[in-house]
Image: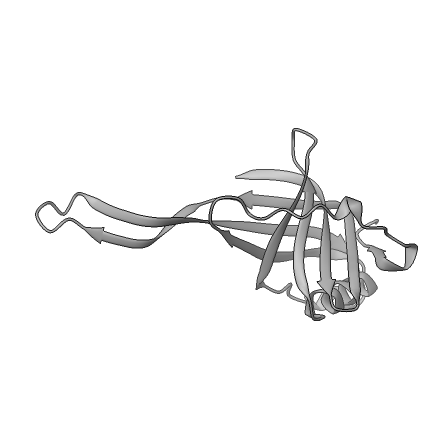
Length: 151
């Protein structure tokens, strides 16, 4: 499991591309390889035959948010469009990975008044390479990006 500081969520909708930036957030990244077909050998049950490998990566995002930032995050996550996660790996390479929401953030009672830590679970399933998209070639205007977690 790797821990990465800072992330950006990208939503690619029919109306355009929208960004949600969280420079003070944290990602816990857990890659795992799974198989679509797993069968035990008929003669020796200690041997397992595996075919059609794929990757299932899980991303647990954490950030300390104000109440208004929490509602901006929920609005961003629940809006239509494809969701991507961008982060900078340890070798200074930006990675954009297509993700789906595994678990939405919970809204604790204290978040209605005070900043608190919020956790989101995302996952990505792919065969071979995750299908990176270079959003750096797309022109960003100030109205497309929202920054959260600055406290």
